Image 1 (cartoon, rainbow, N blue to C red):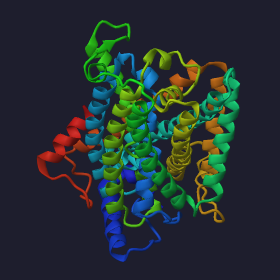
Image 2 (cartoon, helix red, strand yellow):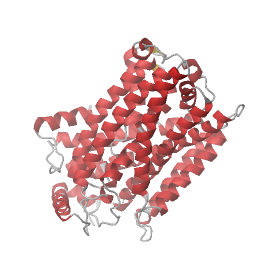
Image 3 (cartoon, rainbow, N blue to C red):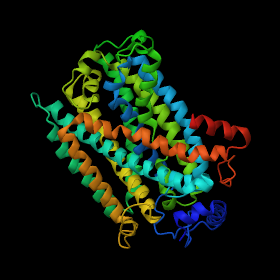
Length: 464
């Protein structure tokens, strides 16, 4: 087995070996004793291109993440700020996605940015790989935490909508949070072969959910004789309510909300050892994830902004999940609100399963190369369930412990999970920047490769 030290000491040799293995695998179309990362193939290739794309759009969860943060994003410019900041964030993350797709195609590995940084970093590969790996692992553990909290908030909000006078407590969310966490963990542990089917169900509900939500928000206010928001309030009424005098700063800060919605660039790359022909299929899945995510997110946010009749009621809403009040206004009834919330609940719950898969795979690859405490213990692949059982349990325990913070301080909890974008972005830069500085000489082209200066420009913007 090729260790982290081996890969760092001989980056070119290792990647030539990996590329040769990748070429052989593409030609043979079946599992090899050693996969393209230089490790023994231990995981089953249960995923196909369709289920991988479904994982991308389900766990990417763009429209739900965007709508769920609207009560925060509204302060950074009002409705126009939400739209324009999301579009700007989408453009930049599509560029980053192109960079990630190139590396994933050339070096398809479950380690993702960790493995890429080890190779692109050249003689500094060991340090680059270690930092990229841990930043990425922590980012996905926090991402899993964030999604579980959203599902818990959705669940409690659906109950609160239908029960007048119900006063939501933080411990209500915490108990729901724990239940959701361990249901997700047990599904990932014991339904490994069913995960592709589960993700395809999630993909269907994401597509159907956004379509139906847009239709309801566009049609029902007219049916109920409720006024739509004006064109000016949606597109032109810029309001900087951040407390800072600079509107430019408010715009840049608001882009973080859009980044949270579209920032899961490397999501599907960590399934490289569980999908056939990863050099081709990973870039295709990334493309599908971002085309669907950015378009559906744009149409969705425009629809709900037109469907809101009172932003003051949204901001003063007693419900934890802001879409509960938005849907109540758009649909004109509490039952309609719960129905739309359920359309968001199902894909978000399945998104948590996907995030659990991704977080556990990242941590497992670190343990596999001896980069974690008790690495021999956590690098084990269970021969009965055919998955990194102990790494999955660790992910559940981590999320559970972090959830205890929510009971004590919701603000502190949000500060932790908000680090997802910062940590994941740092991990991307650690892999992409050395790739640019070295003139891409440490990496041999895969199925997707941006030729000449076009590639250098895209990578340069990704690092900016």
